[in-house]
Length: 507
Image (cartoon, rainbow, N blue to C red):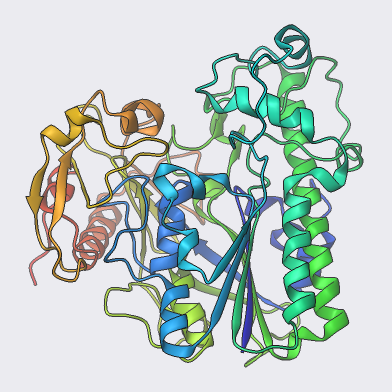
């Protein structure tokens, strides 16, 4: 067995043609969907970027215990398990620079080898001590320009001075490196290749030929990086932002097409699995919001695309699966492909079992650390918030106390206590660190930055756009019970129940 795992970032399900999208031609996603299983009720787990990847690698939810942070010493990572139990070689090709920050630095080393392509977003790549700030100020929209070197946007402005030709774009280089691995190793057996590109994550910067397909009336400076929050831009600015996102999706489709061409040329379909998905979606003005993190976890962010070709049971043309699946199912799926059983701590279900009906989940739990706890049964979504996000009692459980790009502060650690061991920490005790108002976590993406914090219930059949919260006490009680059961299964700490007014169900 061989497997290729393609992971995009912020790829919107509803944009893709195979999921009914019409705004952007996606012939290669559609081409793959004709010979892969399309999973229609695939959901996120922990968010955003690195929490999502922790779920992907470990097969369990992390958002009830931890915010953005590294893999922990007690985490089971599927590349390591495959190496130990099946002798499977793993290789990561990525331009996702968060892997090389403090809050992600233990992920890429779980693979046998890895290749890092530089230059995306705030990657501290090119050094310019004295940039031509005034020229650059004229080049970029005021919303997107800053001279503050501690902000990703400033480094991105510098990086883009060195990304001009199409071949220089990081995602283009990323796919090229993945194809190089396949050219070299296609005849070998027993390997996993993960091709992971930061695109179409903001900023929405694509080569000119992809942007030409989405003209707008906007006449101003570069505007391809929306703020996280309410839409308050002019209509032509909104159209420009969306058009730039569409252009990067078109680029991603082109890159996927290169991979499919190689699958065809080398006939990899007969013995190589192919899984294509993302970590989460991205709001482009829906619900009057841009981006993620600041608002309710709407379908556009939570319900994500997933396409899988399994050579053990090739899909029927256009086959789809309506089983409820989650990002954390990836770990169990890759273990299953190589005949390895999931570990006891894994909560994920192999996609093969969901597809054939031998294992199906009743509901899926998802969310941001410190935000709402969310649950769906595929028909309804229920989003339960604490009464006050800014004053809730909440702790992080870790032995790797780092935020995105810095360690926990001394002030945070001063309040830490030793806790556990927890059921999934393999006998290890952990630090129980209180979340402080002045925590770097809070200032960057913590629950105190939420714009929406109202508990809501939606009926996805009657109200697929989630525009009209439903008042149905019976359904709310049923979903609250499902939520509580899943929290117990995830070994959620007691305060995780208390903060949202739930009690663990009686066993």
